[in-house]
Image (cartoon, rainbow, N blue to C red; front, side):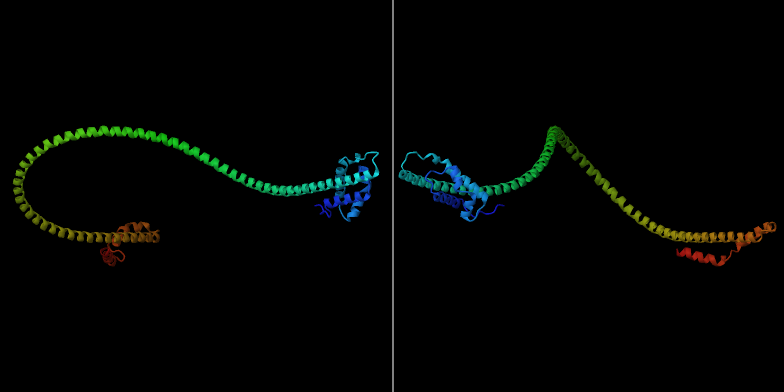
Length: 329
């Protein structure tokens, strides 16, 4: 970043003009004379401060303006000195006025440049903001493009489905029209059959009335017969009910007797199973003890078995106990 200028272009211009006026040249300033009278070092010493580069650029601009005016050729040979001095004073006044106009115009130009720089800075800031907004809008637009593509795909799917539904609707409409026509045909056939049925119903109704009258007379006769038969049947039913109650009592007693017999049979079966088990155990013990005397044991075996069956171990006490358990069960 450049250092802030301590001198303004107006100060530099006024100082240069003052130094030219102090030089007291009668003839207009030329480029060589301008460089001889004014230099960067002299101007900086006169001002007391200033950037050499800035002073050099300003001096070059002022030199170009002064020399470009073409006033170096204004001196005409053979003019008296007093007229020449008056012309020089006039020329100095014109140059001063012209330089003041140039200074004013340049100041206005500098102000316009500063305003343009400020406007350019504002425009750059606005451009940057607009770029950010454009980037955000682009990202939003990309998202919306994706949503639009998705919606287009959904629209295509829905459109295809709508076409399929339209075809199905047309097919169902055709089926409905066929069903309506068939229903109309069935309704006509039903109306015809209903009319025929009504005609037959009227004929049958007359015939039924006649038959009903005959049946009513027959029913009266049958009713009398049924009344007499009903009384006989009631007496018969009363007798059968008494017989039924008697048979139920006998059946109950038979069931009790059968349950008792079943209990005794179960008790005997349990006793028999226990005795068989005891007998098997006893036979194994006897076989183990009398293995050397098998021949004598063969003759005594049947008598022992009979004695064992006739007098089982604990047999006299087991049977009443098992029978009592069976009855309880």
